[in-house]
Length: 80
Image (cartoon, rainbow, N blue to C red; front, side):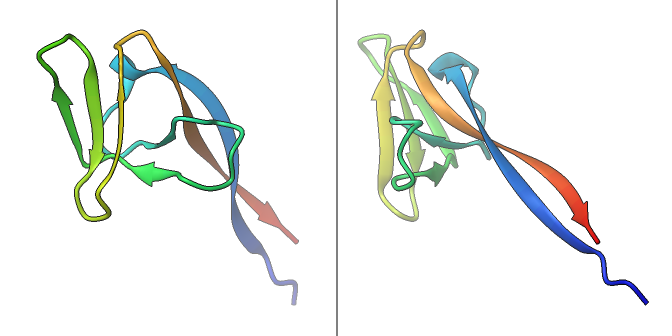
């Protein structure tokens, strides 16, 4: 009997801050393996920028709505 292993393959995409949604996993530096966090709050700021926040870890990105951040995109894959 064969065992099938399922894995999540992570691809990195670039998105505008204005297109981020709660639940996205993001990073200011898409090339980095560290510093990624899941967004659980998005707040518009008085100067027109946005704060992408994870309140549990006190992690955030503050950037303009057209600034680019990295987004983790998961794709499920099965291996025999």
